[in-house]
Length: 528
Image 1 (cartoon, rainbow, N blue to C red):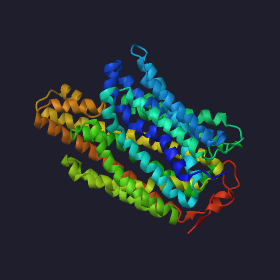
Image 2: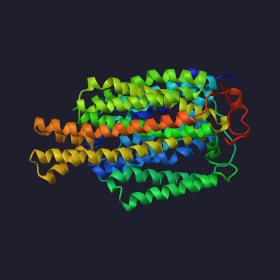
Image 3: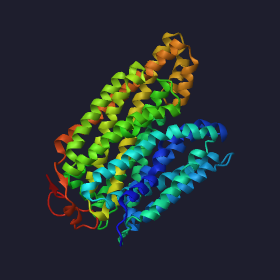
C-alpha cells in the first residue's frame, strides 16, 4: 500500500479541526444578535457557550479511546460530518419558544463531535510523521489552528453584519474541504479489536462534566455556593474512582499507567499549568481590548493575532529543537520566556496604549509557542502507536481542565477586583452606591463584555477613562497570575523533565497494546 502524502494529511487534519478553533471565539460575538433576533435570555446565551465547552470536556477521554478502536480516519470523518450537520442545524434555529433549547442542544452536539474529532485528528498527525519529524509537524498544526482562534472574532464581525446564522453555516464548506482532503490523502486507519471500557467511560465523562460544570458556574453560583462545591467534589470523586478502575481492568479506557513514566507525568503537569493561561487568554484579552481600549469585538481579534504572531514564529523553533534534542530545552526556555512576557505585558496594561504593549504580548506568545507543541508531542512520543488516540484524549482532557480552572479562578479575580475598583471610582464621582455596583457588575464581565463597553461609552469622558483604567488594573492582576502559572510550569520543567529525545525504535518496540508501561523505569527510552 502506498504511503500517504504527509503534507496532504497534515492539511486535511488542519481543515478537519479548523471549525473547532474558529468556534471557540466566533460564537460569543453573535450573542447580542441572538438575544435580539430569537429572544434568547442572558442565562440561555451563557449556556449556548457553556454547553459546547461542557460536552467537549466530558467526552475528550472517551473520544480518544473510541478513535483507537474504530480507527482514526473513520472517527475524523464521523466527527467532521457530525460537527458540520450540528453547525447547520444551529444556523437553522427556528424563532419562537424552542429557539434557546434548539441552540443549546445542537451546541452540545457540536461539543461532543469535537471531543471525538480532535483526538483522532491529532493522532493521525502523530502517526503520519516519524518521531524525528513530529516537532515541526505539530508546530505547524498548533500554529495554524491557534491562529484560527484569533481569526474567529474578525470573521465573526463581518459575518454577523449579514446574519448571525452565517457563523455556523461557515463550518459547512470548511467541512467539505476537509472531507475532500481526507479522501485524497488517505491517512492510515488501523482499527483495534479490543472491548470498550464502558464503566470507565461513564465515570470519566460524568466526573469531568461535573467538575467543569462547577468551575463554569462558580461565577454565577458563587464560590461559597453549596452547588459549586458539590459539583466539584462529586466530579473529583468520580475521577478518582475512574483512576482506581483503570488500574485494575485489562483493557482500560485511558492508559493511566503511563503516568508512572516521569516524563509523561511532567509533560501533563506542564500542559495543565500553561492551559491555565493559554485557554483563558482569548477571553481576557478580548475583554481588555473592548472595555479598556474601546475596540470593537472584531478589532479585538487583531489583538490576539499579535500573540499568535509570536506563537507561530517560536513554534517552528520549538519543533526543530524537539526533533533534534528533545522537549526539555524548548519547554524550559518557553516557560521562562512566557512568564517574563506575561509579567511585562501586565506591567503595561495601565498605559491603555496598544503600541506600548504589543511587543510584550508577542513575547508571551513566543514563550507559549516554544512549549505547547513540544510538550504535547513528547507526551505522545512516550506511548505506543495503538494508544495515540487515548493518550491524545488524556492530554486534551488535562488541557481543558486547566483552561476551565483558569477561567473560573482568574475570572473571579477579574470580577471581584473590577467591581471593587469601579464602585470606589464611581462613588467618588457622586454616583449612588447601588447604581455604581450595578454598573460595575456589567463592566466586570459578569454580565458580558459588550454591555460593559457600552456602559462605559455612555458615561462622561473623564469617568470613562477612570473606569477603563480600573478595568486595566484588574486585568493586570489576572495577567500577573498568568505569569505566576508559567513560572510554576518553568520550575516543574527545569527540575523534573528528563533530557534527551525519544527514539523511533523505542516507540515502535513498545510491547503494550494498551499504552501500558514496559518493565523498567520508563515507557520510552531516551537518547541524548
